[in-house]
Image (tube, rainbow over all chains, first blue to last red; front, top):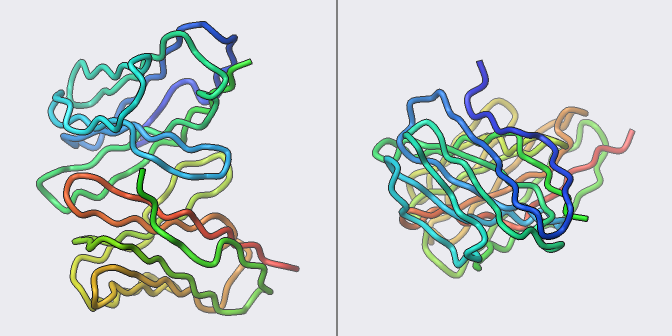
Length: 113
Length: 109
């Protein structure tokens, strides 16, 4: 029943590891996003995909690589994790041609030790 | 990256009081959105505004799209305990949503 679902909800890992976060939406939307929320609660866009094509890339390090196998999925892979990557990562989706309202997942809290 | 100036940063109020918060930008936006985030959850849309001067209500919440298109306001009337959380404004110029810095609302018993 969940509209935008992310897994895992919590992720604790060591520096230098590689990890992935998955996102799926069942709203039939054509656009998906990844946001990063830091400890001060600032929400910042990282990537946006429309119909599996990258349309926004906000100067994110190359260690972050989004992958969209289809319109309903946008996964985020992070290589060589660093302490500064610790944050909450939110996936969102919208229907671009319509009012383009973004609906958010519950977030993945990443802690890099 | 750009962030919208949102104020106040935090509010401590008593149940039943009215709340006002606002968001200002140096850029013009075509859409203003207001979201609320509860602890451990993602932002949830409260109100969407699409035209300059537009005033829209959602229950006890009322939001306005500023005439200059560079600001927006959110009012909550007769606050209740479940109103606690962080409120974010967001403006959209083209493809991208830019979020405000958030207003943390706390209700004092």
